[in-house]
Image (cartoon, rainbow, N blue to C red):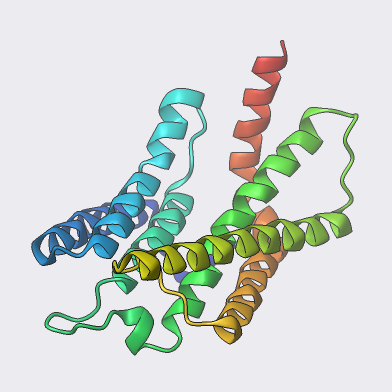
Length: 219
């Protein structure tokens, strides 16, 4: 049974939550502008763009995500952006004041990345007989895919932090050191494992949409 079914959250409620989080992101962007905080502005702006991906996929490619998947993507974007803000009146954001926030957002975001990799590879597997991907290899692929993306993200974080330090500016991404980077990669792997275990139950519909798109393009 799907998690959404166990929790008994209706599609209408899922859509409402996604819209609420999207509106909250606009509020976070306004907070960043009011504070003159580049980190909040950039992270909230990127998060807002990410929340537009489901509508973009449906409009341009005919790939319809169900409300639960849209909420999943929106939640990952929202919690990352929220972490850069923190409590009102505080100079420290949640990434600094809440020890588990960085790990939580890494696991959530990496699960979205894993879902993209899973959906793409499964759709290719169904689309052509020239590609055959055993279920055991799919598990390994997701781990490698997410870990590679995670390493790339850590390099980007480290580079941005160094550039900000060299120019005397505030960094837009938080980098806490090598031990934190290793923990981030562990939680990236956890996100990948979650998708590897429950991907079939939650992503079958979008896999079918992507397969249909590939079939149309190959005709």
